[in-house]
Length: 167
Image 1 (cartoon, helix red, strand yellow):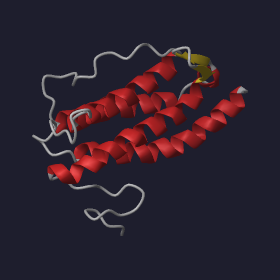
Image 2 (cartoon, helix red, strand yellow):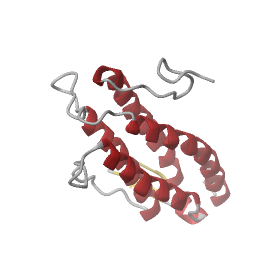
Image 3 (cartoon, one colour):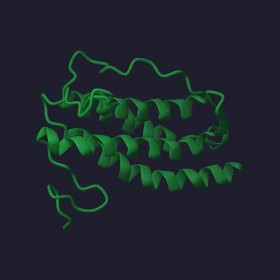
Image 4 (tube, helix red, strand yellow):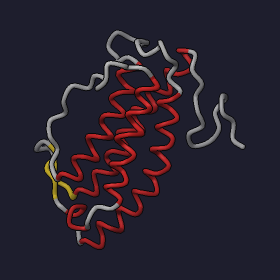
């Protein structure tokens, strides 16, 4: 891939990421306080664990792209003593959104640098934005499937929902 191609891909991904990150923020904010421990089945993560995984993994992907390496993920517990929805949204806004701006302004050389992903594959940094998108959409779907069950409202994502109809 050339640097121009990496920049071209970045521009395409940034259009998607701008929309998707705004939607992810809405979904995270829709998790009712006091319902983070909901687990539909003993083998699944709780709603809170999925929400924090979603926020922290986006941070991890973006930092890894900027740093040119994927370190082994650490502990995915809430980084603050306050595991509330408000703290989760604040964390997302304060980490993921600024990192997104940094990636948006990354040099073509940074974007085009091949990065190994735990020996499974080695791709140019910019291509991991697509991986991040798919990963986030997957976990956002899991969280959305739990929202109504815990008394939350499901936000509009790609069209209206029963709780947030299309205008």
